[in-house]
Image (cartoon, rainbow, N blue to C red; front, top):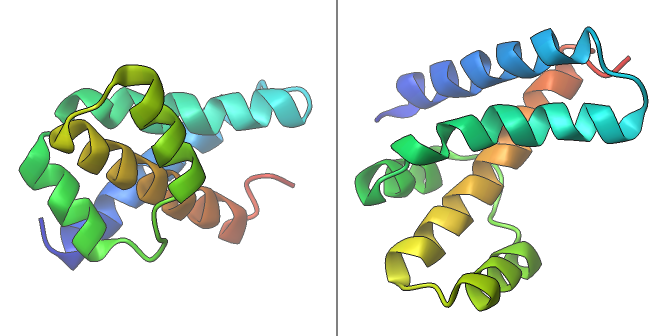
Amino acid sequence: MGPDEYAALVDGLADDVEGALAGADGPDEREDALWAAVGAFVPEMERPVCEAVLANADAEPMDDLVDEVAAMRDSDDDEQVRAEAFTALLQDVNARVAARGGYE
C-alpha cells in the first residue's frame, strides 16, 4: 500500500464515519461511529498492511492505548503492531472527518 492507496483507505473509512454520523446523537455516538468504521477494517490488518499503515499515516500511534491493549490481550509482536496501526489510522480518519466538517 502506497500513499495514494492509504489516502483512499482513509477517505473510504471517513465516508463510512460520515454515513454513520447522520443518525448520531451526541459526542458518544459520534465517537462510536469513528471506532466502528475503523474497527471494521481490523480483520484486514495483517502485518504487511499494518506496516504500510504505519509507513503512510500522518498520525503517530497512541502509546497509552497501545500499551493498554497489549496488556489486556497478552499481545505478541503482531498484535502490538496491529494496535499501533489501528490507533494511527483511527486518528487519521478522525482528522479527515473533522477536516470535511463531518462533526459539525
